[in-house]
Amino acid sequence: MSRTTSPPHRTRAAALAGSALLAATALTVSALSGTAAAQVDSGRAAAAKVDNPYAGAKVYVNPDWSAKAAAEPGGSKVSNQPTGIWLDRIAAINGTSGARGLRAHLDTALSQSGGSPMVVQLVVYDLPGRDCSALASNGELGPNDIDKYKTQFIDPIASILSESKYANSNLRIVTTVEIDSLPNLVTNTGGRPTATPQCDTMKANGNYIKGVGYALNKLGAVPNVYNYVDAGHHGWIGWDDNFNPTAQVIKQAATAEGSTVDKVAGIIVNTANYSALKENNFTINDTVNGTTVRQSKWVDWNRYVDELSYAQAFRQELVNVGFPSNIGALIDTSRNGWGGSARPSGPGAKTDVDTYVNGGRYDRRIHIGNWCNQSGAGLGERPKAAPAAGIDAYVWMKPPGESDGASSAIPNDEGKGFDQMCDPSYTGNPRNGYNKSGALPNAPLSGHWFSAQFQELLKNAYPAL
Figure 1: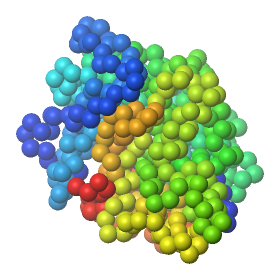
Figure 2: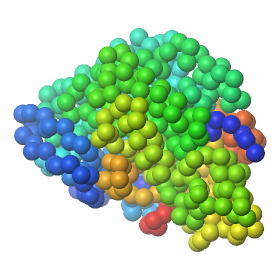
Figure 3: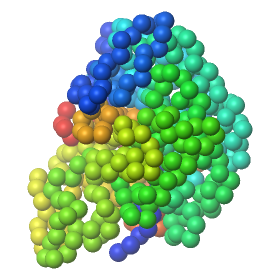
Figure 4: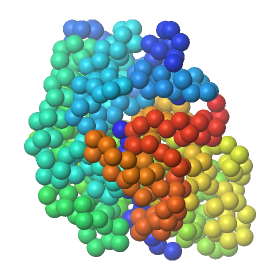
């Protein structure tokens, strides 16, 4: 139940008590222009699609995650926050040990809603050859299992969501579709130093494109489903030679297997990752002694330094290549707060451009390509609707406290391998500039509860708890 984020393309230069468990957190409503709450006839007819599903709605609190968070010291401070439900293997649809299935989640969401609009956040994550650039969240399906993906994974999910009890209700189903997949086809293929044979295979067989297109088409046909496609993060796609090509690949997938761009409500960025929401101590336009910030080792010629600017720009790029002008964006802020004692209080010294950037940046990772159980990370902005122009919501799609991957090889029946990027002693590869991984030690399998990480996230939360 985790995801791994493929790093940059090159190496240049939280038990709730009693009723609280059934109380969904209402997001702050600051609706985008043109958004209005739908009039709902619960149980009879689906509400009309809205521009932003989060506006005027509660968001589902997953009791499974909430109980784990509340059992931690200090966890009750955040255990009432809404988080994503990860459908990361076929068995997850009907439920696994310790995690309820999709119908049970939807039934609980209807109970939590009290008749008001209610967002339920699903992560649809089981592509053939999943996560071709890393091993920690490899999936159960082989590279050529596209038919099994369609008939045993997407079709059952679509069938459940289509049931009248759910489709004709006050629920707004947000589906985060196949994180990690499409950007990998751009950054980790071909002759690049970051290419992997697995990603080359998935580009050649077309099953990422086919799988995402099929999911968008089938899920998007359900009247109260809102599809959001994964678009990586700024430290992955923010370079010139990744930006537009990734938008083109997303459009290719959005128009495959019978889908159309109209079945895409928006994008999600920074899913299960750590990139800072907004860097306040420097901008991409700053210079130090005549040298642009873009030349710093941290920025490395990227066009963006944080997720807010990247999400807004990439949303516009999708409009430019043919997506509807009202598509939105989600930003996963579950683990990108970077607070605590290490958070800089102001800009770095202008001795040179690297001192300036490194002294002022909130994101304290060793390298922006590091993605696994990052040391020093903290909870970020709490879930909130329409916090900025073009942004539908800040979300906690990755449930805080769930591991990104095991620190060492652990035999399992979940299809999850061991990735060295989760080993604190690993000294890197081309995708993180041959730097240390920055990972916490003693981590369990991806998606399993990692108490030490949860405690670190609480300690370093920004805004502070």
